[in-house]
Length: 314
Image (cartoon, rainbow, N blue to C red; front, side):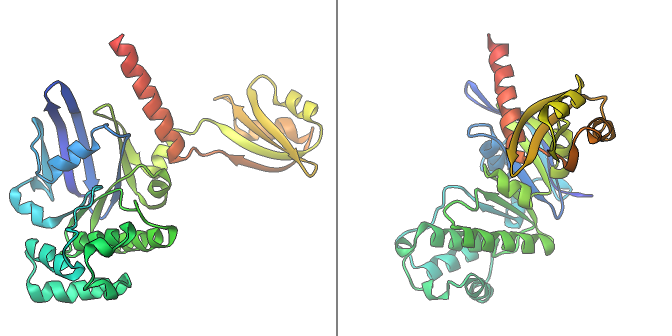
């Protein structure tokens, strides 16, 4: 699959602080790409470089197969975490102004804004002052002016901040629709639930370095630990004895006569081996592998990476 954006070996230094240290990412066309990391990891520095707000000290960025150039800005839409609408302007007036800044004609801007305002059910806000809007309302307007000029690449920094669950779903559906229409999207967020739900691929940055990347499916597969939930009926001691030394019982609880146990298998033990060992001892109702969530993986990787950094500094 060809790339809409490729950053190669990016280094960015601010005085004594190295914000990015040899970071590379490859965003395929038509992909929702999660750019993840704790605060201060380097995500914002990378986004600023992609938006040509600042330059890398080393490395290169390619957009749609060619070195990133000032002309490419018109093909990139950026929704920053810190929203920047002018409070004293009317909503429609400001949306028109921002659309024309992006090269749209007045007629085209008015037509597309009218369509988007109807889609988001905010047409009555056109003549309201921005300062009259709630945070969520202002967020909708900002989202609209970000996507209005139909850029090839959208960069959304915490796009669901300030939204209630209903409006979060509305924006998620619009993100999916934009993807279906061919837009490539970089999503920078701390919300791992959203990452699992909408991202195709991710990169995790911590302490200025990329420490993990891949498809969401592959990353979750790579971090499986051989842990299974087993639901059964029978004697707990018989079950524990049947597990033997090659399986570790992590925890168990009983409800309505059934026991649910979490077991970690040794690498050489298969699920067939496990079932053979326990079926004669207890009545098994279910066996399910525990797949780690993106939140679990984020916490584990960022924690381990930070411990390694501290150890290297000692």
